[in-house]
Image (cartoon, rainbow, N blue to C red):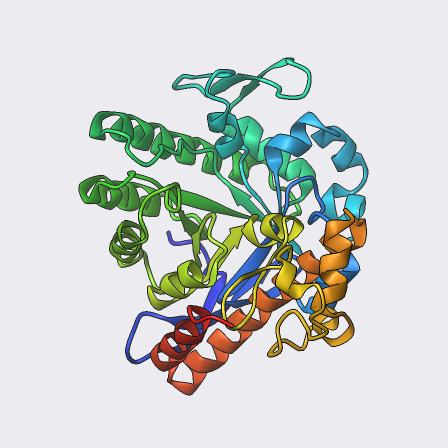
Length: 377
């Protein structure tokens, strides 16, 4: 029997697979397409929850691996889950911790049962299973749970990619069984993850196996891992076309306008990335005419806003010259203002994307936006 759908389509683009919709989650409806800021340690770096709400975000991410190690999921459970711990009123999506564990190549060992790994903090040893990943996210009272999966890097051979696919499918089944056993009175939603690296036959097999488990949502994993953009676009289009209309589709780890617009064109509803805030802290600011590096000397006496087309609080109240001054003096305020602006820029971009789909001109909007974005100020 199919699970009740948490996704409702609002509008479809006539010239592409782009669509708008709503995802129903425990802490409110989420309008899609949606960019989700990443809050690794239950905080989006340099951005308060009040600022996130002011911008208009309805869902943010937190990281299972990091929060499991510190402060620990039992403490977060006692605090009332992530919402009680942080005070964030919107939704939380939590990853499974798998990507972080697998990036610790010298500190972990993968078996059919799970992953043995050493903490990057203190060297302590842990064993993460699909069931434990669900238990941790249950303690968090996450609105969206992600299954434990195996992500393979760009360039992995077909044999390794197949082995990862098999584990991902098996772990998805175990994750769903545990999720059904333990969710109790809380209706957080589990998403399965399609893997298969850059082999179309494996992508098709993974999609078939994950969809057979009928999780409330489906993620496309293993993209934006170092491959060229045209390879990303091809595999994204191929994989997204395999997914059903009645479930939210999530591409993990994309956060630049080019990648987001390509995902939306192929019917993807949800995406996240640390890129906007990480690069903000390093002096890169999004503008309608492409990103700028505020550290450059040419902005030292520029009294204009970071982005003349942006109406966010930072662009209304601060100049490029002042932002550069803050950056050059390592002032904490720079990270706060730059991160706020980059997140507000992407939030507004995605709002305009939704509007263009509903007005029936998404392809024109995408072309015109990228034409400006790739130009020079």
